[in-house]
Length: 249
Image (cartoon, rainbow, N blue to C red; front, side):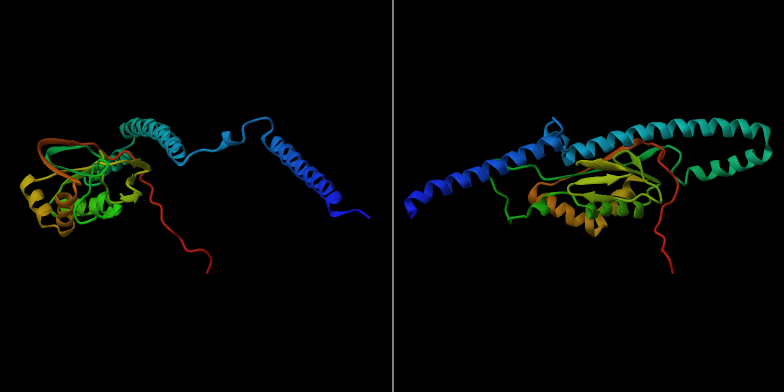
């Protein structure tokens, strides 16, 4: 009869064999999946993915500008031959300025919004603000934009991108997503118009007042500069409208 003491070594041998067999199977499977390469090599961080997509957008933007130049040249050539094309071109040229398709130069304001700076170790802010209290949000940028329009702005840019009727301002974390590109603070809004009226509109706007209070209490950046000759570039992005459409009945 086999005793317990005699069975224990055999049990450990069997367990060890099972472990070694399982490990070998895992190693073989990993080798087949990796096919001789590093398994982690295919992983891409979110920041790298965003940077790569920005490079793609930059290349496509260059292609778009080249195509737009070709279209303008062909249109001008056709207008010299066909009066109908010339009339349509003149109509389009008359609408280019209000549509934001022409550069604008004149007096106005530049407004900069920035996150609060990081504190050194051991420092604290009064009022115990949350992390969300210390960054610029979508509503802060929109508050400035809406105030400037209300103050009679003739044209506007955000991060040097021309604002048109279809421009959408969205925040992704503490970054700004605008016209297929991502921007980090400080966020700069420029508007051409009467500087006095624009400043008065900013001072009256309740969302701007709230942001200025946070800036005074917790160190967020809020700066307004007057300019006598601001130059706002023309909108150079796509003009096609995209919208949701119901499916089925």
